[in-house]
Amino acid sequence: MTNLELNEVIHQPVRLQIMAALTSMEPGNEVNFTYLQDVLNLTSGNLGAHLRKLEESGYVNTNKTFIDRKPCTFISASEAGREAFKEHVAALEYILNSKEG
Amino acid sequence: MKINQNEAEEALETINLTIKKTRRAIAQNGTYIFLIITGAVWMVGFMANQFLQGDILQYIWIGLSLIGSALSVLIGSQMVQQVRGELTKIYGRRVGLFWFLLVLFGIAVIIVAQPANGKQITLMIVLLVMLGQMAMSLLFSFSSTWWSVPMAVLSLMGYYLFPEYFYLWMSILVGGGMVAFGVYIRTRW
Image (cartoon, rainbow over the protein chains, first blue to last red):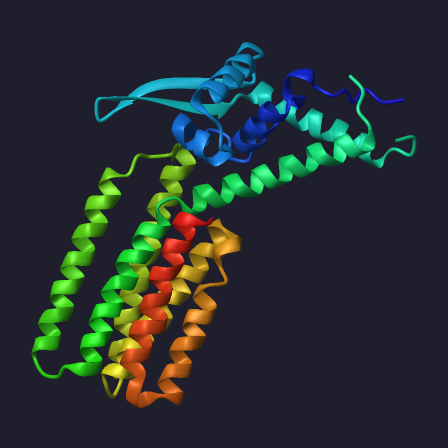
């Protein structure tokens, strides 16, 4: 018996990559939207849609700002997002190591 | 929500690949530009060392250093900050301090060792730069460590095996190697 459960919001393939990328950074660091788009090889519409879903769940924070008078959005994983992602990874590892398959 | 072991394995593999890719991309962000600039400066400068003599070499190196520094500052200042945060700022300051201290140590080593000729000074500088690059790579991105080691070995080989063509060797293999690696990071990595 285990209380490890997969997180349906995070498990979607694109959101899984987004959360993996964001949680791989040091806590407190935030990444530029366009840079994240390049790293994950996504269109801005696709990334934006999945980020909205993650933001609604409280897993990511977005910070809209201006750099040299140009609008710029920075994204980071929230503390709740980091915790949820950690639990999701633990659940995946549990399934992988369980004998039943 | 139920998934089988294969799906769990695939998901974990995706996570690991994404983490690796993100960390490497962040660590290498902008590195290629400085590799290409430094490599190009070394290519032209060492080529001049091989084929020219006299005071003109001083002026060539001063000119190349000024152009290289100006380009690095200009490009660096125009690069959009991709990752920001308190820790990133602290690391940035530490990296800057490290290179500044390495330059001071390099000057001290050259004063104490009193190299006999330009080739020895060149080799000392190149070895110190490669040591600095290796230290940075080990701290921030292990995957990019390997290139500074062969560059250092190639420089030593050139110095001991082909002293007559040392500068040509440095220009093509070390300077050219840096340019090629910079282009590779930009296009393939």
